[in-house]
Amino acid sequence: MNKELMEALDILEKEKEISKDTLFEAIENSLMTACKNHFGKADNVKVEIDRETCDFVVYAEKEVVDQREDVLDDCLQICLEDAREISQKAQVGDILNVEIQSKEFGRIATQNAKNVILQKIREEERTVIYNQYYEKERDVVTGVVQRYIGRNISVNLGKADAMLSENEQVKGEVFKPTERIKVYILEVKNTPKGPRINVSRTHPELVKRLFESEVTEIKDGTVEIKSIAREAGSRTKIAVWSNNPNVDAVGACVGMNGARVNAIVEELRGEKIDIVNWDENPGNLIQNALSPAKIVAVFADPDEKTAKVVVPDYQLSLAIGKEGQNARLAARLTGYKIDIKSETQAKDAPGFRYEDYMDDYEEEEYLEDGTEYEYAQDENPEETDVEEVEAESVPVEAGGDGEFDEE
Image (tube, rainbow, N blue to C red; front, side, top):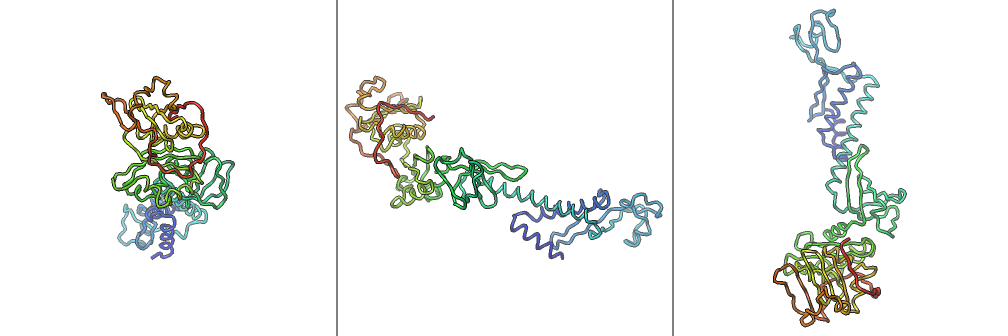
């Protein structure tokens, strides 16, 4: 039993996750290469390795000829006299297995055999790492910041290094070497030098995956994240839906005293997160998405994917948000092109038909043809279900109406 070889194979299999069958194959190929370097050819050479004991035998298949003078090629033929020393039953014309002592190989042949094994181990190690991280593609992993390469950041993920490019970094975020951060794996490519892993800190799916890891109800499917819109480093809006009527989707995501959502906000370096209830009714959904602004009326057209929204005059700036951010995120979250007007502006805009809804704000109406949903509510509505983390206390003033789409 070759204990040294067996121990070496066990260590490689455990540490580098390379199967023994692959290693045995590499050893066989290396011995074949050594024979070719030593004898000049290895067409008739065979290698047998016992998988249990790790003992191996190298032999050459040679044809038995009558006289020594008849031997034309020592690698392929053997005279009967020499053959009888190996096997008494040898006869002229037989194919005899002649054992080759690997210890007789020269230095160059041995070195070449070693290189073949090392090369195979490196290739398999790269393949194992690639497969390991390819399975984690579109998922969140924890990495350690190593160094800045130009404006890109090298992040160590454990067994491989990933690249956080400038385009995938959140503006204003600065990392120090050895700092641990969570990143979203965008893409894993297999290259001759090993797997190339691209990661992101700006992708909306990063927030989604963080909620899945933090909120048990999302992980087990009780609560679903229906839609998400993000402006990295500033604000994220997510719409959630509960499959269990006894479970509050927004409350589950927020957690006790905001513990769950605060943990995610901390990981995102203070990025604000709005959590709203998803609704199949586009009017209700748009109203929720524009929170914390109060809405007077929403006129949504599902076919055109457009919506007209009326807000109180004093709520117009809050509905639009700083530099249009609130309305822009709401448009991305709902998939609707949203046109926001104040009550004063709506009265002068015939397209809104605002006068039709002045008498009844508490009722939700549907057109008979079913092509347009319309939602209206009180002038002093209750606030919609929303949880806003670190919301701006003073809304930015914005004059005039605003029209926003998903772009």
